Length: 507
Image 1 (spheres, rainbow, N blue to C red):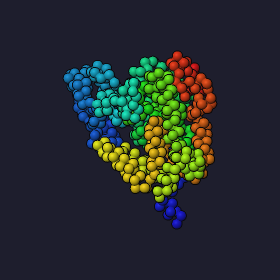
Image 2: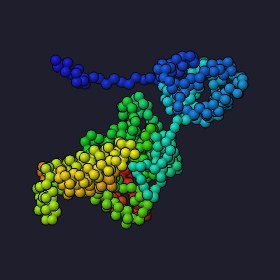
Image 3: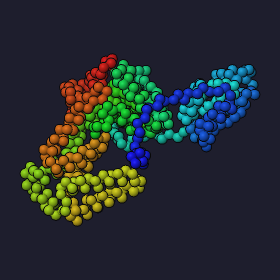
């Protein structure tokens, strides 16, 4: 019976971890065997294309994946030069292969391949394969032609005075945008592959002699230890790069879609991870104070940047703590509020069927449902969500006596403040619900206790040997010049980044 229940609910049985098999199979000199092997691997897929012909009485074939290559370049730079060249004069197929590679083809991106695993990897990346019968080497020709989204400003990171360029899904284009901004030979891109099925290409990007050797080695080690079937977004990888990835609400790995932001972090000694197929670039390590910084802070005067930074910190506390404090003071400590406000709250509570805690919970849940609907609905229907929200929650709910006006005002202010720091929205959304529950059960002392626990979590969190709360904890006077205030560039240019003090740093 127990065994039946285990099989029914899929209880995992302990098993030894099998080592990975080495699938590198050398290419056969026979063209027919090569084509048969690739057809079996792709299982006669409809986008598997082969074209057989002869080169000076030697059988040859062009193999590619339909939709990933530029057919015009294939015809003008590969097929036409081969067919119009005439007799080659070489005897063996390998000699003909070398002659075609060096004297006939006009493409610049060429790679020699010796194994079938590399053939499949290059074919699915938009390369065309030139194979000759009797030669055990295949020439991969880079003629990629798949469609790519145009470069535009990322909608999630809008800046007023900065560049309007954002990363796209193509890996090469993203690395080019970084290289164009950092024109130094010390900028390094290391190629790696993640995903046992997707075989996704990634770039490990860092600045030599600026990034810590310990950071680069640790990042390289963590990436190589990732075992996953597929990588389709940055979130598939970022979780593996954190030390306490399943405990804290806050992430010590940053994500950005702006090349100027990524370049600024690289110049500070950080390491970036570019993933093919996604415009989001991972930045590590990432500090808590960087959530309140943006590139616009460095394009305005220091006094105005300091003001906006204080507004961001204030918005964080309002978004996370205001609903909890409202519930706790209204339930347990009404003497802390002005008499007129207490009268309004008491009247609202008396005319509604729910308690303050339940009201706050209910409105926040409705707001999150509306937010999710607004994100998922087609754009033409987005205005309907705002109309429904304004009528149903704003007017009808209050006039019908289901929700109190003061509670609705608190929730509206909280929602507005949470969008001042969009990258912190996920932890803020969870924290304010927890604060509402704790405030309704334990009062103000429970709020203070939970807030202390959040501070302890932030101050004790580390990644790659860097404290998450630095330079606040551990405290550094020099580092504080770009935390609560934004100093001038004469001071910021002399700044020593915490990442550069890591073990193995050359600075």
